[in-house]
Length: 474
Image (cartoon, rainbow, N blue to C red; front, side, top):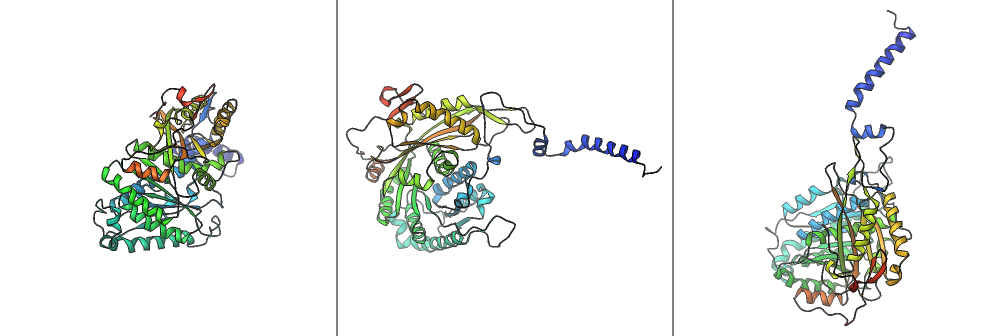
């Protein structure tokens, strides 16, 4: 048989192509099948596509990369830090974090923290590896931790960790230049230093570490996130640590929650807020950069910021495809936003019971929806147009809405997905009232505070006329 016959060769080629068409699809990965499909199944009318963490695009620009340094102190700090970092990943802003410096004396906690980190950030972490303090601080008070008897076990190790962290910030994790890779960053010198500080004796270590870090980057603004413990002994120790921070005079403000409330929801709301404000400029018209949001939120120096947190689960459906598209409904999102804006005006949604707001400070309300960007904009435009038809924006000119998308992991078995409305506002007499609350003393506020205005679908009215808070939906 002659194999140079064009007819025979053509027939053989057609047979091979037919076999390939039958065999190859059985072995191609699902992602490739999705890419080669003629078109995905169109979503039903009124649907809003849900964002998945693995498909969220990176929103960080060259100027924004590495502007944030995280300092995590103690078990609370590293646990909340892991959640915060994950939220930055799910908003597409992971590259905003330049370096993470963690101080935790428990080897188990260190291992648990490192196991949760995204691969992209693991190379930008500097951990205090000291194991001299067996079992940690054993609940020691701030004064005891700072005294020479214990300080000799941790002070030098912490100083070395901060020094190594500063080298990482200035030199980055990229030691070798590769012309095929993205441009080499010129250091991660921060504009913001975020300190997640455990209460109790760890406050003494946090003060020492954050003061060293601030001295290396004097133009950066430092913010403290901490918690009042539900343990009465730790709670009573908090004012001593707060006094140390106040004496150091470098903290812009403190963001506080209270573990006597819903600690899980509080941590989730705090993580949503910090990651969300970095994504806000990408989703909002004429919105402030995160540094400006942080500046106008508090007072000039040493204030306390109070979160208001409300959440609802949205329904989830998916398409019948090898790799399904996940979606909820735009109307469900709009209703949830209206309800959340009404709910957070009630004090029951405060993460710590302090009087607010401090006069002449911004009240920011972050609306976090797990939607793809184009659907987020549609919901945003619908809500803001409805509110503009009322006196919502005129009723409180210090209140500003911010919008962000926080992707959530989903599977075909998922039935619901979380959205949130998170408010932030400055406390009245913040430091004094925080100390009083920690010691079980009454907090003080002006005799008459203006009644907040609560949005409804038909307009706005004082919160006192709307009944009790809608509350947090789980």
